[in-house]
Image (cartoon, rainbow, N blue to C red; front, side, top):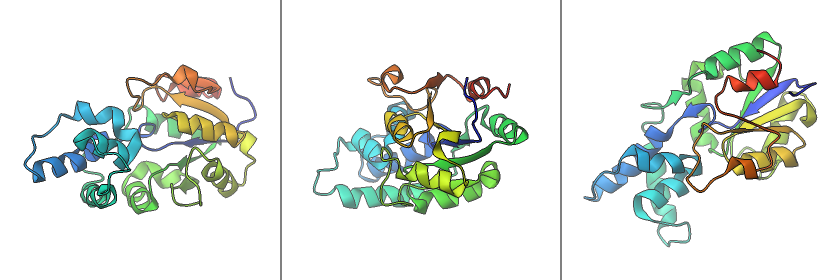
Amino acid sequence: MFHDIRAVLFDLDGTLIDSAPDLGAAADKMRTDRGLPSLPLARYRPMAGAGARGMLGEAFGMTPDHPEFAAWREEFFVNYESRMTESTTIFDGVPELVSQLLQHNLAWGVVTNKAARFTEPLTRALPLFRTAGAVVSGDTTPHAKPHPAPLLEAAARLKLPPEQCVYVGDDERDIVAGLAAGMRTVAATYGYLGATTDPKEWGAHAAIKSPSDLLQLLACA
């Protein structure tokens, strides 16, 4: 159980929201636009946490060193921008979790590697985020996770020392960033875990199988 915590910071995709259907659809449109058969969402879901790199890798086997990667990534971004909230949902239990945090006078916020180009309209469109005390995107600071800079920026916006914050995420880079920032860390194992990923190896202080499990760690249950 964690003590002396005053805020909880979360990763976005795979931790608070299930954006895999819209991310997958954006990549799949690129396939069908090229006359290729559609792929099932189940193919895209494990790679959703890796953004454009993961989606283009799954859809086309394309890696960032491909000469056309930048152009295809922008095409993916445009597709995604046009449908960011079409099929994206909040994970079950997250609204109740946020409500409990607020009732216990705990601040909360978001630290994501998603660019502000997407984070800002997405969080504005979803009522859940109206009570967030900080929303930090992948390009808010000069460094993205696993660098601790975005997490330290979020703590500064909340006017709290990092050691009074918990960071929750579904990817190893989230835990690496949280530890480097001096925060308590929680692995969200209900997120977009790839088949080769073992959260036990990340070094997080704790792991949760559902959003509500976090309340036990914070003594809010």
